[in-house]
Figure 1 (cartoon, one colour):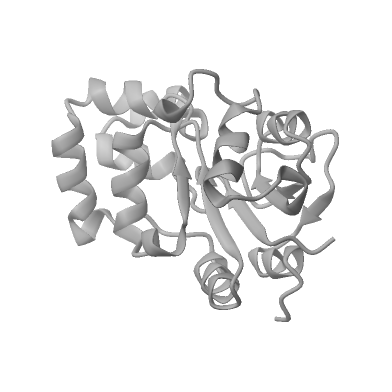
Figure 2 (cartoon, rainbow, N blue to C red):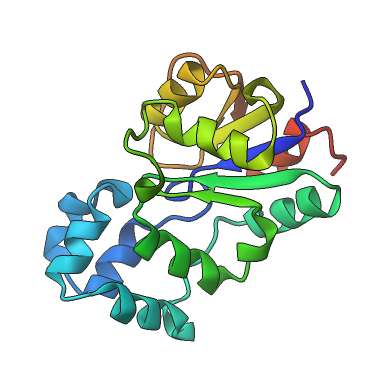
Length: 195
């Protein structure tokens, strides 16, 4: 099923942030607390970051987060073919927005739903439904791409097809996966865009 929109998670889907958070926070002993970004806000606050100092850190070219290989090319191809792109993340906006800005991809996304945008978060469907409303599309016409079981649960609750990013943090596919993506170039298939 070709979709008119592809909505993505960030940590473990667009970028590998685990070691990046630890490096930026200079707190390698807290590695287990990061768990792929789920406690990123606590880690960064413990390291002394405020939203403004974190934004400044992200704007430093030395702190630019690396995307998974092939992600940028695939996202640019999707956008250039008229596919609406969005982000739904459980990261707070003060983390997600400057990190995304540092990649130079912010302009590709028509909607960004962060932790503060809804009162209920993944695995509840609210963030995905908010993204679909922002894109003026119905959930069945949008793919959600993520790496975590909570991503799959949120997509199922939103009645949205889910594509599992196998390159992310979860070693095996969650239940109710509509499609398994082995590499980022397969994002194009979700919207019927030729490679």
